[in-house]
Image (tube, rainbow, N blue to C red; front, top):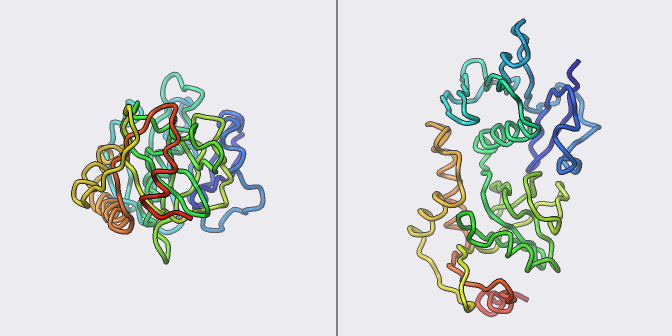
Length: 274
């Protein structure tokens, strides 16, 4: 019999029906709640009882109030459907489920839930220093995990996927369960206001170069947001609006750094960090 657990990421709760909780792995431990009760407004993710074998049952994401948008997706090497009228996402189990299937499906769900809540899931590293957060973006191999390692003395919020939501003042970044290195501090209840964004590249020397907002927005969409291919209007418009608002709200730079060099003194000088 499936057991419901409640996961909270970026202050948004999701109730997940799972037959084996341990399939999520220890990275989710800091994000699972035990006090939240059913019917308290959390989103829901669980199997639809179709009467067939488990692999043919779709997953669904629903909320008591409808508000999702329709989209067909090739994600997970299959097709996912968001039914606006029914307020749910359906997806059939794969024939041979992988251990991290539930984790990836939850990530898929949150990409849509956050877009509806002035938020984003970002492929980026985030570091908190002196009460402010700094985002480091770039394609795979650019050095995001290296930045996290070089920032071990500060609070690393994430080195792979982080969540961002618009707040009354600025934009806040939150940890997620999707991280790679042990230096990550995934205290799920501690959002931090974003101070600046850096598009990083490995270099033989340390340098910073301011980036114009148009160039920054284009680079941000390409390197940080990977789910637009399975998200359609009007939901994608909400995500675009949130991304543009974030880029406009903080300074953006290109940054070169070396694997063995401390780049934080350069940032201190440029941004007048205390």
